Length: 343
Image (cartoon, rainbow, N blue to C red):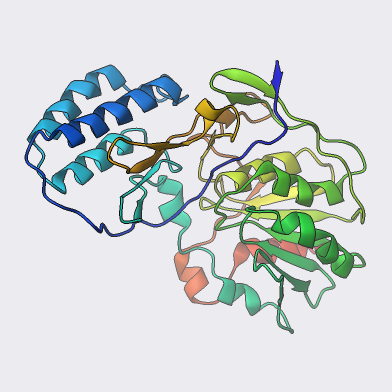
């Protein structure tokens, strides 16, 4: 079993961007063909879920080779988009030479829950303004029922490593904490560990991780101070994605934690900064960049995160209509559960 010190999950869940700096090339241009060949080969060499998703990648070669031969100018951008969309992977994206980033596909659960959470509705449950960390990666405060609340907006950089201890110190005397990771957009395991480590007094093993089809050992999560011992409710929905799902799955192993909401989006692809072949970002001959995952985590039960997601312990479904009317049933359940009103 191999071991690496730093796993970089490039799990950015962005928006479809407009195309810039496009110039017209003749049909069947050498550059378009070179980009197509490089893309097809990169996916074929590193993408871990072709068999799991029953994708006939060899058969798609002839389809998209013909489309590339017939494409003129920016028509090839659509060909590249459609080829990568065949992976049905919410992490896969490409960047044009002008800098625009395009995500060809999103999971259906993301669209289902896109409007079933609102930070403005959440704020209606407070009698004070939420505190925002310096990086903007987290918001937190204490609800009127003396229940702590933390919204995590991302797991990127090292923000939570630096900022999360102060959040726990602020909430240490509450009767419970709600950790809201709905609408999550990815990050690194180091920041997941920075959060989970304050809710356990024992080391916690990661779920199995594979990189380029090889098992990789990652050091367990070690407990850190301050330790929070009271009940915790983690809120999730279909927009919880990527590192947010990893965080949810690890939290589910802790006896003080209950996960509430709906099944997460199902984004299990990851990559690493080492070895070089495992880097998800890959430059095509034209200078365009594609991102194709090279590894993945499994859940503790051996199932993939990819497409399957992480189910809640208690399923509570918000609707867009309820959110429009200022009602967050998932948050209300969490408040009532910690305050002892749920039986």
